Image (tube, rainbow, N blue to C red):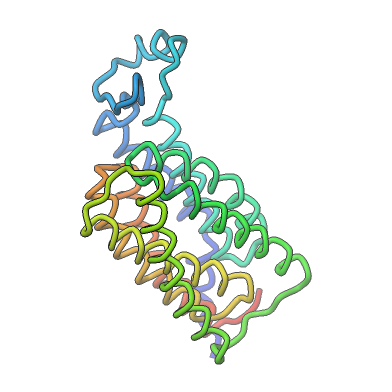
Length: 243
């Protein structure tokens, strides 16, 4: 049975604006835009009026780019919820930005993990362009899920061993789980499995823990919104089907 109000909610442009406003508002309230990466370390509380002088000296405007990246990543997810391939295309671009920011916040395994995410986002663009339709889970879905988790642990620990960064086990376990879930989620998204959103529900919960550990306020807010979006999207895909 079709649930029209749910389809309208998932496809609402007002929900897009709410997500963008929420992320931007919290980041500005917490002065996250005043965060930079300069001289090999993260520095907080750089006044916006003096930010450009730091940038001219080689500083990376970490807070501003993280906030912009969070907003566009949210819009990517919203378009995917609406089954609009523009979301996958935006995801390709934001993956590059997210990888750089994750690296600067201490996840040095991003060097070898984010290229995989970039490939999977690109695969989704191609598959959706070819007319992929929503489908129920099958054996391939479970294989993807398990393989993603195992690959996530292997690459994150390998990256930490090769490139350093934060290496405490609690941090690496959280990063491994989130990356493994994202592999499964992105791969499932390419084939438009209904259960793609189950992956993202679990992923968003774990990402909240990860980004609290990273003190990345923009992403904390983003993943709270994502969790809500994933819940309504799974019901919309299951009950209302293809657009």
